[in-house]
Length: 231
Image 1 (cartoon, rainbow, N blue to C red):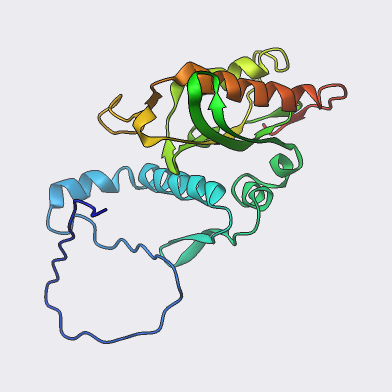
Image 2: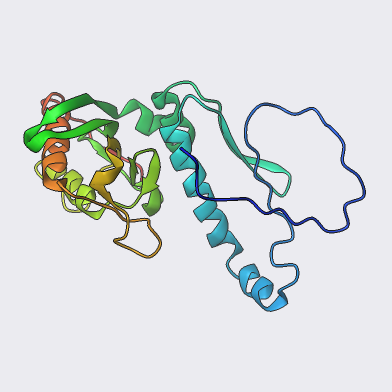
C-alpha cells in the first residue's frame, strides 16, 4: 500500500549539512513561530500559556496511551514533563500524580471478534475508583483513543458518566482512559471539521460493551469506599 501524501521541506540560508549523533525516536522543535507574520505573532503572544497547555495535553494523552515509550516536553530550555515509559500505571503517575495512580482501576481487556452484529473490536483502559474525585485539567479528564488516535468521543463520555452515576455525587467527577481498536471502515471521522470527534457505524454495540467493562470494574470495588478529593 502506498500512502498518498508527500513531504515538502523548505530551508532558508542553509550553510552546511552534516551528520550528528542522536537518540532513537522523534523530536519536535518549534522556534520563531510566525516570524514572518507579525500580526499573528502578536496575537499568539497573548495566548501562549493556553497554547502550551493544549500542547501538553496532547503529549500527555499520547504518553498515557503509548506508555511503553518515553515522552518529554521542554519549554524554553526547561524540562516541564517526562514520562519514561514503563507501564500504564506509571504513565498515570507521571501525568496525574500518585493519588490517581493509587485509585486507578483496570477495566480489563476485551478482544471480541464476534460481538453482537459481528462488530470486531478491542477495548482496554483504566478508570478512577468510585472514591476518587477528579479535579484536574478538563481536557485530560477523559482520554479516549480510537485506532491509536486521540479523539473527543461525546457518546463515550456520556457512557462513562452513566457508569459512575450510582457511585458519585453531583459535585464529583470521574476520570477515564479508554482505547478502542476497530475496523477503520467503522469509524466516521467527519463529525467535526477538526476531525477530533468521532462516531462509529455500530456505535451502541461498542458502547454497551464498554459500559459492561466499566460497571464490572466499579462493582468489584464499591463495597468499601474512602472518598479522595483532589480539590
